Amino acid sequence: MTARITRIAAAILVLLIVVTGLAVTIVPRFLDRLYYEGPATDHYDGARFFNPDNDRDTQGLPGGGSRGGFLWRQLTGRDGRPVWPAGVPVAPSKPAARVDGERMVVTWIGHATVLIQTQGLNILTDPVYAERAGPLGFGPARVAAPGVRFGDLPKIDLVLLSHNHYDHLDKATLQRLWRRDTPAIITSLGNDSVVGQTGAKALGLDWGGSATLTAAGLKDTSRDIRCDPDSWCPGDRAQVFVTRNHHWGSRWFTDRNRALWSSFVVRLPSGGNLFFAGDTGFGDGLWPAEAAAYGPIRFAMIPIGAFRFQPGQMSSGSHVGPAEAALIHQRLGAARSLAIHWGTFRLSYEGYDTPPKMLAAAMRCTGGSGFTAERLGVPFEVAPYATPAAGKPMTPPEMMRCLDTPEMKALP
Image 1 (cartoon, rainbow, N blue to C red):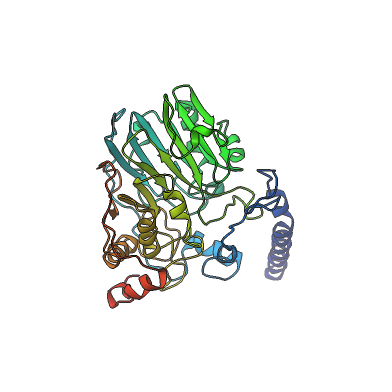
Image 2 (image 1 turned 135 degrees about the horizontal axis):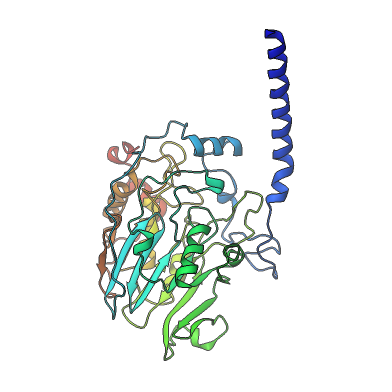
């Protein structure tokens, strides 16, 4: 009897191995998607997008190893990474319906989701209310509840959507927003196709493209003289410019780079511009200045987390850490910046509160000011643009030398 059970178990194991092997070989072909078709450019080869400032640092898996090993580490956290809290206390706030005039109120909702209220507009970045950041209910779990409950969100006028990774493009949240508010949604090429799967409509633009939000709605103004950096037309509520950053996109691995990734500049009638970095690595480090060319940046949202995929790592090709984030703030010339992309989903190796501690040290290195981490759900006001203190211009190697201290090395 025991021998028979052993044979059956062995047969089942062999069958599972065969099925798994076939799945790994065959299934990915069906998970590929064609989100965009268009002429080749300096960042699109006719089939897939790429970073023109060199794509090598985004092509491998962060921390190295096999795809299966990376997925296992992400699902289980079994790679010796520091323990995160199972949950973080959050007291959600209830924003005002509108904030008029130049006054600006910002609330960090979690990860890359930020509510900006100014000029009578409610702007939301990369809205994610999912409990897990991954497909089919799998992926890293949320450790911090949203800083604003979905039902307490004011009517959203404009959504900025940076790319199609699950921790930034949450189809369920977009569908709820669309059904409730029908906001204008602006994204980069190909992601409008993913958004369209929810029944919502998004405007997908290339780097350098622009759109204008007016009382009558959203208009693609990429080839319109009105979007000259020095122009502003009566009735314009906001101008949005899709700008370069350094990242990649995928929903199912095999659809890698079928859709573009981007940052955004939002020009408002007065007070200075907004900048949303999305999700990004440092790349050539020139793209922050490209964004700043659209005008003074009053408020920026810059990622500082998910940078460490092995002990001691300070950044990855796809994600800046606090050290490079401080340089981005400096190169933007931003008067005020908010640290995002940390403390909500455990995506990498660093400790829960390592990013904000390291950011404070990096800002001391530059001698600059205005770039801080804030508490989830706690609204804060951003003053109109005023020229920030210059600080000390630094290169990445100079920053790394400045942070080469026992205090920084002790951070998990």
